[in-house]
Image (cartoon, rainbow, N blue to C red; front, side, top):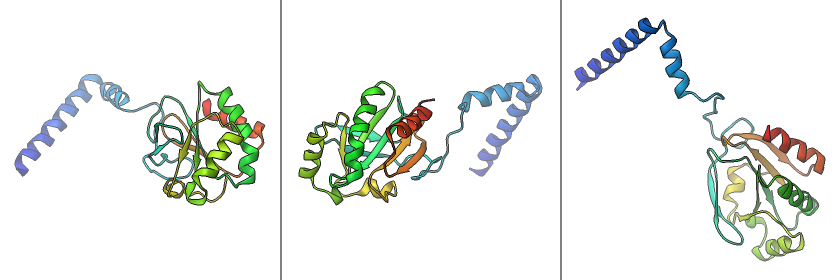
Length: 186
């Protein structure tokens, strides 16, 4: 068994040397470029900028299941909130406007941390503020904990490669938040 492994390693080394000599090394560089993306993607998963966003799947308030994690067609903004949170109430119209403005370029998912809220109060919040983006229900707070939530609202900006670009604790003005979204979309 070990002998076969050594033979395979030896053959691979010889093939590599032959390719190197035949192409002056350029063939290996071309081959390497096929297997590498233009921008390196981090390998660590975590809840801070520069790391891969932790993967999860949650049910929506209305219907459907939503997934986050890994490559996507477009970036996503996660908005962790609770119905009793005054800054969340102030932010809701801003998020509605941004959701409408960037609907073709950005997904916005509101995540109600139901562990610190009730489904009834969350539904009333959605009706009161005419929320126009999907609301996901984090019933046991596991996703909020996974993303190391510390305040309401918390917004997490994730690029199309699944990499967290920024974590925003608390509320920003509409202009500041829109500028961060524009940076994410570049």
